Length: 76
Image 1 (cartoon, rainbow, N blue to C red):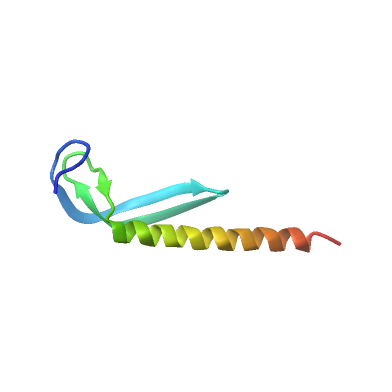
Image 2: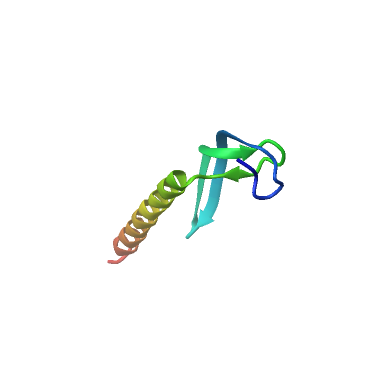
C-alpha cells in the first residue's frame, strides 16, 4: 500500500486518534491502521472508521442525556 501524502510504504500497525467534539475530548491511543514508514501518516480502514463513528454516536447520545438530566435536576 502506498501513502496518499508522500507515496511512502504503508505497514500495518496502530495510530492514535483524537478529536474535540460537542464539549468533550475523545482520544484512543492505539487504533488499528496502516501507518506510513516515511511520514507517519495513518490510514484507517472502513471497519475502524465505522467503529469510531458508532462510538461517537453513542457518546453524543449519552452526553445529551447527561446534559438534559443535569438541567432538569437544577429546576425546583
